Length: 499
Image (tube, rainbow, N blue to C red):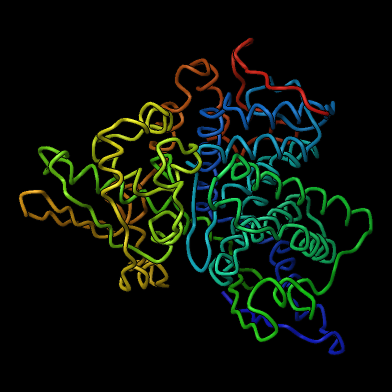
C-alpha cells in the first residue's frame, strides 16, 4: 500500500491531476490486476449475505416503496429486482435503488469501522445492476466488487466524516463509481471524472442517523448507488465533473471536512498490487448496529449468571467514543429510551438492545424490535437502568491500526440490588474474524437459509446458492441468476406515487 497525502490547494496552484486523490483512485480502479482467490471467495460470501438480508426485508414498507418506484422504470435489457422474477427488468440505476434499500433495511450486512464507518456491501447492488444491464460476466463482476470494497475501505481508514456530521455515504458513492469503472473496463480519465462527480453529489448530513431515525437510513446507500451509476453514465458520454473535488479551495475537504489546513493520509494499493480490503471487513450475525454485535453476544453470556434480571439495580456499559455518542446515552437522544420509537431508532439504542438480549438470550431481526416487545413493562424498566460511558482504552482500541487490538465491544458492570456486582467484557463479536466463531461460507449459507425460510421456496434457495457459489464461472448474460424471486402473489404492493 502507498499513502497519498491529501490537503487543500488554492486554485492558482493548478494542482496536476496526477497529484489528486480522485485520479489515484481512478488509477487503482483501472489497474487490471487479478483478484486473489481469498478475496474472490469473500465476494461470493457477501453476495450471499446481501441476498439474505434483502429477502428477509422484502415486504417491509421502505423496500416495497423502493421496489414499486423501480418497477415504474422498466427496461427490457436492464437489471433484476430482488423478489421479482428475473424476466422482469428495470433501468440499472433504479434496480440499484430498490436492491440497495432492501439490502440496507435490516442493518444486518457487512461493516468496516476505522476513521469512519461503513457498510461496504452497499457497493454490490449498483455494480451488479450495471453488470446485468451491460451483459458482463461473473469474473467482471468480481473485479468490480473488489474495487468497490477496496476504495470504500481505504477512504474509511483515512478520512473521518462523522466528526463533521457528514453521512458515511460520502465515501460509498465514489467507491461505487470506481467499482463500476473497473467492471466496464473504463479508462482512468473516465473513472477520474466519475469519482469526482460521485463525491460532489453525495455529501449529506448525519441527521439521517440522529433523533427520530426514519426509513431514509435504508435509502441513503441506495441513493448513493443511483447517483454513482448516473455519474458514470454522464462521463462515459464525455462530460466532466467539479475538479479537483477533494483538494480545491472550495472543495468538500475545505468546507465540509477538516478545512483549508486539512491533512489526511489515504492508503491505496500500488500499481499491480492486489485488492484485498474486503478481507478486513466483517458481517453481522445480529440485526443491529455493528457496535452492538459484541455487546449482544456479551449479554447472552452474562445472562447465564443472572438468575433474576428484575434484581438488577443498574447497568453501566464502558465502551468506545462512537458507541457512547452514537448509539449510547452520550447521544442525548430521548428517542433512544422511548418504547414507542421506530425500529430504526431502537436499532441505534444500545440500551434497548442490551436489555432485550439480556432478557431473551436471543436476537431476532423482527421479533426483537416488535412494538409489543419494546413496550413490555419489565423491558422498559431494565432498559432505563442502562447507561453508557466512554472509556479511553476502548476508544483507543476502536481506532487501533493493529488488527489484533481492534475492539468494537466493551466492559459491562451489572450492579445488583443486593450490592453485588457482575463484570464481564468482550472485544469483538463471535462472528468477527477474530471472534469465538468466525463466519465462514457455511455460516453465510446458514444465514441465508434462516432469513429466507418461509419467504422463498427451497428450490429457489438452492438455485441461488448454487449460482452464487459458481459466480466466477457465470458467463456474460448470466448474472440474472443472482436474483432471488418470491413465489407468485407474495410480493406486497405499496401506496401509489408518481412513478
